[in-house]
Image (tube, rainbow, N blue to C red; front, side, top):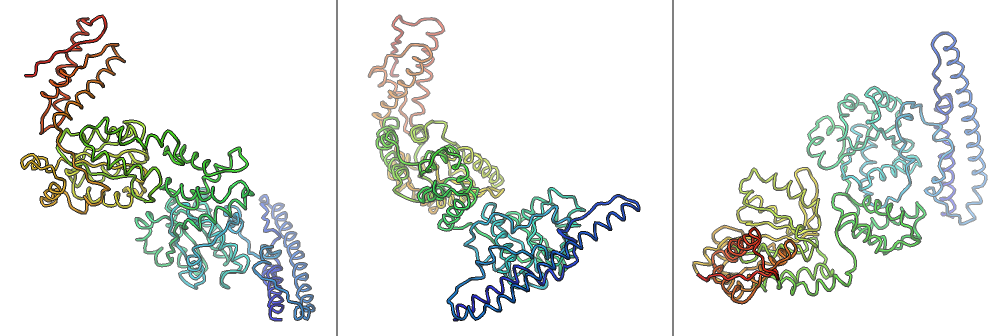
Length: 639
């Protein structure tokens, strides 16, 4: 019985809503469809306008009267049916009935010519799912229901669904599902970029006169409009909802005393992954695409957009990818399609490891050891971290790997980074290099952040190399604490920069002279010295995945390096001049002896090869003194 009675009450409420009897009575003599006739000037024009006015009012009166009569008949009929509801267990909810809409509500609204021309009734937006941030919507409703200071300033990033949620609220108000003070009111969005100042003022005056309009202006940071709105802010019949982002709020609107006095701030945040997933399902249902997008495909969109697209927000960035995937000529879209699309858009290789890449990772350590001589512990630490990251063993927001290379100059720190960029990222130019001695002063902080941010945005999948990190200003080093921990930073302009698809390598020669003077080859003793001298702080050093000491190269290592350098030179000569140098043990031994320097590593070796080998070859080319077999034999003195 209780269910039946409640259902009867719900139907009774719906009939009143559907026919909007009270509203129609208040607007009984309003022109039909709010038509406005622009008559010519003069006497004839006056009578034309008067006739049109009378005609539209008569039509409006007749139609509204008929609607009122139908409403009254429906209420009487429902009263006669009341005993039936006492018997039958009928369960009818008002929320379901009002989705049909209202016959008389729109006819009962006051006249708003300019608003209807320049504005958009937000309840007519696509009806997507709104399932989170109920507390934010409730806060908006409470604020709009006040008698004074009943305006709202919404703060939230672009793409998190501010417009969708306001459209949801507009439908609630239209369907009498909001607070009583708001039911029957309209949310009308204005577009200031398309309007003159006088048109905006006319719309404001119409809204005040109508007493049931709440104006919505989104992204107010794009318009100089507060000066136009300010004279009306204290009018209790004028209500508005403004939206902006966090950066603009803190830099501009937070300090606008007139706005803050009359408006309540409501913050919107992006939905979590579970809620985003529900939004995508609802979007697919609305667009009749659900059959083409299995759950695992939608889940891949959410996960990968979170990981790879940093400066857009959910759910918009996932919906943008959905819209692109719809264009694929396939019956079913799978996760691999998502991976391929995002790889194309971001330049970041993702997805299941292909056979060749598996082999590449498996043999990464051996490949690097073949090119970086005498630093096996460093190579092992790097290769292990990269295998874990690329194979998906760990799930972290940090960079793929972060390493601090310590040791004297010329022992292979920079060479390791170059080889890693070449073999892991595909080319040596995929290494972004910073000479940190350029950022000794505090006033270089902004320049460093902007250059770093733009470099990563241009090459999000790369190796970032910071040479001589100890020479940077302490405030610059503080920035690394967030980058290494969270894999991201913000630029001065508020752009979020992600380092999650980068490898970060910092090098330092700090303590090199101390190492050589005390014959130290132990990493812990070197780090203890660096910390005790205040060169680098322990919290900075501890942020890295690994801190690796590059040891001084012995004579055997120098020989291997000399042979690699000579082979590289031969490759160049064969390609450019179709000749080569004969490499034997004697040549390698002499170069290693002359180029072995504990203080400067392999750098003297490189200089000797340049001065004594490359210069000799250049002389022979210039004098056309090339053997017939185009193989040059070189003998060097070991003194």
